[in-house]
Length: 236
Image (cartoon, rainbow, N blue to C red; front, side, top):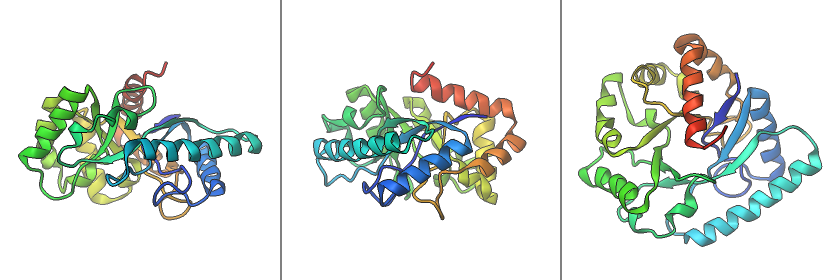
């Protein structure tokens, strides 16, 4: 089954992900062999860097990667640029926020803080939607939940229109599997990502996790998630 990798750190020398163009190419080849049809390039955006500077740096690295892909001549997934953006107070006031959205969409891959969420977190997410007309997609949502019943914590984010992405490798852990099953039962997952950073400890090849998810969740559930991803990305 082909899939969309909604979260990756494949762009070279952008963050703690790929350290070279060569490593990026190998990660993309691994993603393709794993079944990835489209890969979202979502390097970490650090709040100390102005958005225009980040976007210029991202474009430069993307151009280098595309040139290397053409010279390689291999088969690669389709690429879309974006960013993984941390939630902080005042993020909704950033007038350049739309430049961090996934290419061709109004989707912002948003990383939540790990401590318990306060009212301002909910309000900030609401403001992002209301003021910027941007749709937050919460990255690796399973990380913030310790047990299945805690998915109730997501109700306030759901009520303001946020979406949720999960990391496939989390399904390889006991707690991650239980939480992801609960999220899937409620139809809360709209995207799956590798969150890959390298070729070894955090690889782009998520075929094993995808196989287990197919076994435990069912192929129809995964197909439904991928359809949601395609719709969000305006892909035919």
